[in-house]
Length: 409
Image (cartoon, rainbow, N blue to C red):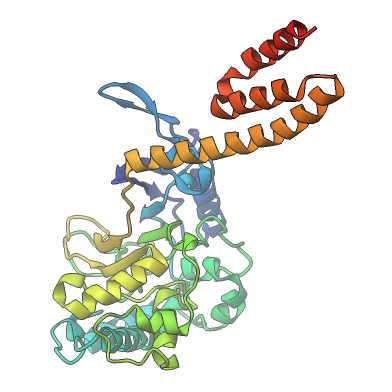
């Protein structure tokens, strides 16, 4: 970030899959429990100032790639890409009192049977859940509700959740612990993070990844006694989804191939709509890998059309070589593949039609002007016919009209 922030900043890379552009931002934002505004500013600077070249090299030389980006962008900026992933040690913390937070985490860990994300484990191998796409959609929604009920009291105090949904910051702050022990201040009034607001995230259904004593599963025992936190995150944003109009109830149900739900069933359409949108925490529900069943494939196809990116897994890994735990995410991304030859044909057809329309307008004006100047009617008719047949011969035809007219005198 222009050398102002020491070891903080980002690496930004991009690639093209078929004819779809993807950008990956790997960031390390400002540290410190109270440095929320600094993290917000870091994210904004990264997303707004990182620039790519607008040309890419190829074996045949240097070629323009500006038509492979979203909303007419030329690929210069991160936001020009169809899909963007913003990942790394974002350093957002959990506000509250340390002892209470650790007790809550221990209770949730015992309840779900481990530190990693439980998510979809139970329904992936449940044949009844995969009976139809509609049944699977409902099962995914219920699984998301279960994860939410287990973790929401901690999500409410997560700084990144709060800065991405500012309307609830005050209410969330009121839930923070008070009293003795190590307590972190709330993020209320620290300012929103508009740069990260449009991004989505899968639910945090795993134990926070920071901070551990290296080589152990013990929370930070140093003098600083840092609070556990979900510092390590994977956020994503798709412009592809924004280009697809919302479906009505009939469309939502009828696209679920293999579904036993009626196209008139508003409950099915409602569940599909909720699966396609982020909840109040900014989390989008996990869905099974489409390879599990036809129902999963149908559900994934529908959600990709609506959302552009879907997450099939989000969790942590138990490597103890750092004071962080690494995280992983698995995603399906909607791409497009263009027929280059057909695209050029369509462009050519449109150009010819546009030119022909201009020529026809010109012909009407020419006829009136030429007759006003006293040109012979037959000369004017022949000239217009030649220009309509060969628009590039306009100058030649105009000169010829004067020659023919002079020959009549």
